[in-house]
Image (cartoon, rainbow, N blue to C red):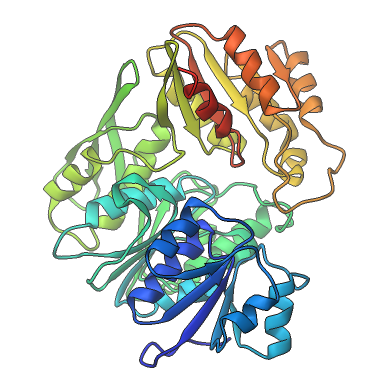
Length: 467
């Protein structure tokens, strides 16, 4: 693997610099004195932000960019960039050293004496953002890379001056195996990304390898509800294993959980209790749902390894307002509360709809855009069951992302499955048809959730623009 010598001047070029993680890594390198350039398929707000910060970005990606930005000492590319990409191919022909985004993240992390990597099938972004909010003190001043825009940071990264690095760690294509954090966090483990992993056992094996990369003097924070926890934690190099959850045997657990909702405002309170004898913490969150209680417990357990100030932990969680597209309140349209959520797995859908049920509204509408054919096919029945938790379901076409083969699955088939189970569901092939349907059917007092990892939130913004 090619490595960056941070003590020497370098010119690094990013293919796919407009990605949510890539843009943050590019800014991090720039802050360390590296000359950074990049390219992406299209202009975007993240690309414009990079340009405004002094990073030259070319759109679209092209073989000519390799000569345009020469000399280039190192190329960084994303998993979405394949050998047939003309810019990638030109870099190979030119013999320029290349590394993946995950490898770069690992190299940056290694520059910090204390580092966190937050992994899990669900909740990574929110937990990373919670931990960031808690630890962003003048004394700790962490550098951060998050997989979504976090409004409190004004973006998806933070450049700090302290010895601490915080990063979201994704398991897809085993990218998190490029990381060797001081503290690893595993929130949960479920079947997902089955276009890469063979099955759940394969996924568990990868998480086990991730945990095995934590050093002996490091720590693993892990969800107590994960199946066969001893099988994941036995004989790990790190000896400090901290569990969190709702069960009595968790090292950090929640008691006295209460939810309060008024319109679009919602709070969740609980008491964090510690088996190590630490004083209980009375915690209040400005985000709804039991899943966010679990995210907060993980953030608390991780933060206590770096921070002794319990009041800062309480204050950081109290002031946490959520990450972009994580039960994000977009606004109100004709008396309808409009929410955007990134949920794209059945477990996430159930958690989001359960949080919605705790709020004071009439009908819950879920406008869902499935993400990838492989995930939809693998979890087809589970998707139908999870979506049935809404009063009304509206389906958009599947967001293909990196895939081209439909695998014989479609939103029309998913709609039929939901209807056959006795629940109300409609499917429309275009966003304009969905918008027209919603404008005719939604009523004052309803809660309208746009859900998915694709572009379905565009409908919500369009409706809100008509107010």
